[in-house]
Amino acid sequence: MEFTVPQCWQDLELVEKAGIDRVILYGPPGTGKTHAALHRGSSWVERLICTEDLTAGEVTGAWIPVGDGKWSWQDGPALRAWRRGGRLVVDEVDRASGDVLSLLLAMTDTDGSAEWHHPTTGEVVRPARGFNVVMTTNLEFLAELPDALIDRFPVAIRIDQPHPSGVLHLSPDLRAAAMSGSLPEAPRRVSLRMFTAFDRLRSTMDARQAAEILMGETNAESFLDSLKISTVGL
Image (cartoon, rainbow, N blue to C red; front, side, top):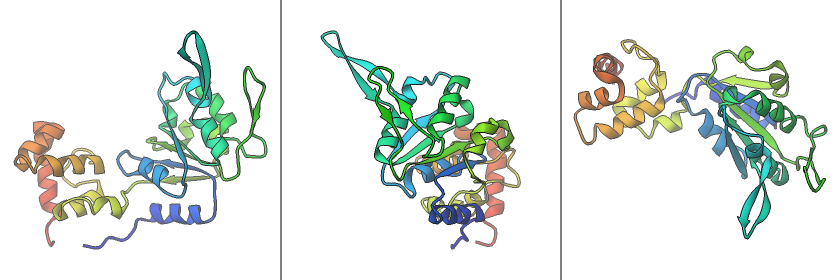
């Protein structure tokens, strides 16, 4: 079975070819936003996973103990990406605290304006040529992010379908359903991750048991009914 590459992924490819270096990928979970950010278009990648507990030190760096009462400075992912001229992937940016968001405003600023001062040595660091940022979020509406952050990213692409290359790893009878994601009888959207887990589980048990483990007894029947509908005509 052949699939047409969804428009969202075509748009991302065109954006990459144009050399846009600040991009937000948003939309439902399980469509491959993070995978694309990590594996497309940059040879050196650093990743930040935002949580409410993420600290500034985990973004830019911190002093860490190395034994015998000594401490050593260790750059964080943002600084490493700056120095290397690589990509900084900021996952689930909507979960970052206010303090970290403020820091991200500085670390994702345009290359001509961005600089960071080491808190003890005074070293001034600026992004090396090639530095770029991809932020991801499962938000459906970008207006929920701070305006100042959105302003730093001229391109935002809603990724609402998985890329066919990811779907082709599934068994043939699951591929059409996985591409659509939204199954007619299923009570909620089923992500590519869920399809992958279902495919693996049913290799060791029957399909109903696999579905019940993943989504509960009530939802399992709807999911299996949707799979039957999606395979009609294959």
